[in-house]
Length: 118
Image (cartoon, rainbow, N blue to C red; front, side, top):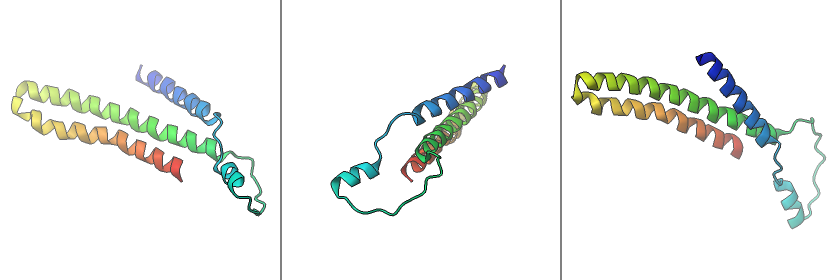
């Protein structure tokens, strides 16, 4: 059951990445050309749309990080609840571990921002 869920989820992430990659975004070069016409050297294009690859890579980075973070928080939360049911004093010790697991999602988001900015 879990493998089917992750397969379906990864397919949906791929579809979302391709959908966002197909959207039209005005290029910075066109704005710069309108502001001040400057002669540019000819650049050969390899036919690969790098902007689309950036969107796809950012979607994968965030998607995988959030899935991994959710799995980690679920396991840590279950273990923490079991420990707290036996000893209530352990609640403060379990909270930082859940926070560390949630940090995985933030790192995925930061990686996606870096991918899109560069």
